[in-house]
Length: 140
Image 1 (spheres, rainbow, N blue to C red):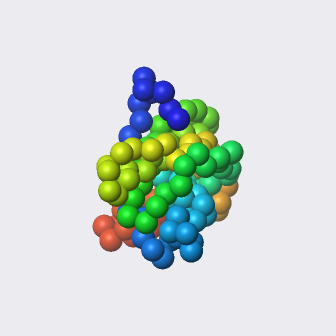
Image 2 (image 1 turned 90 degrees about the vertical axis):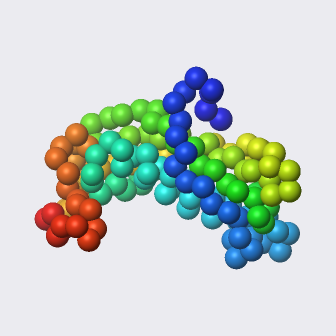
C-alpha cells in the first residue's frame, strides 16, 4: 500500500453488491480490476483533458476478500510522469459493513497513455483533445 507520506486521493468509492459477487458472497477479482482501471483514469485525467487508454496494469495480489455490503475505496496517487504517459498507484481498501473496520485489499500500478483522435500517443501537456460532454462538440 502507499505510504502515509505520499499524497493519495480518493478516486472511487463503491458498495460491493450481490451482482458483483460469487457464490461465497465475495466480490469477483475482475470487478476490482475494472474499478482499478477507472480509478487510474480519474487520476490520469488530472494531468490533461485527453483520451486516456490503459497500457498496463502491473501485479495485483489480493490480500483480503471484499464482502457484499462492504464499501470499497480506491485511492490513487501519480507515481511517475512520462511524456505521454502516467503511472498511477491504486490502493484498494474495504470498509467492512458491520464493523466499519478498514482492511487493505490490494494495491496496483497502472500505466495510462494520452492519445489523440487517431489513437497515437500525444504529450499529456498538450492542449485538451476532448471536451466536456454536453457542453461543446467533440474536438477532432
